[in-house]
Amino acid sequence: MFEENYLGKTDSTFTLNFSTGSAMVLAQYYNLVRYGRAGYRYIMKNMQANARVLGEKLAAMGRFELIGPDEEQLPLVAFRLAADNGYDEFDIAWQLSAERGWMVPAYTLPPDAQNVTIMRALVKETMSREHVDTLARDIEEACATLAKKGGAHEAESQKVVTGPGH
Figure (cartoon, rainbow, N blue to C red):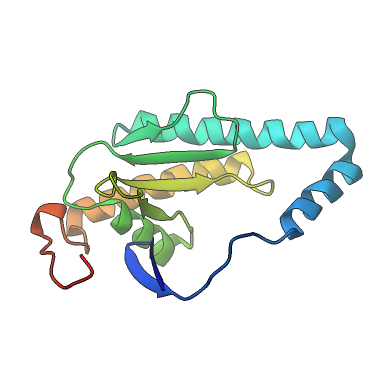
């Protein structure tokens, strides 16, 4: 049995799987054949540009610290709160999901860094620049809402560790 942390909740899983399916690899190969090298490159560059814009918008808010290299190869943005605001990344993920329908997961890092929580926004092929603008605005609004009402998750300093599994 394994425990995994997803969206602020620890769940037990009984899955024993050491490999992933090939469907995503086949889908990427199909896209490469369908669009050709130039078309596929255009799509990937657009996804990277949208991820860069999202990162810039999050950094400009002053609430977040971007995680990872400046020249990210993958079309994603990893970030975390820059300061204690009375709410945490799990609260933001919940707020975005509940009120806006966005799935921007929050995770704690692996052992030896488990006190660090990050969020990850994956920019997909179907995500337009308008979607990026909307997501950034919705993240800002979620933070504003949480600043008013406070977070639902316990602060790290308030957590009490009990039981044999800790």
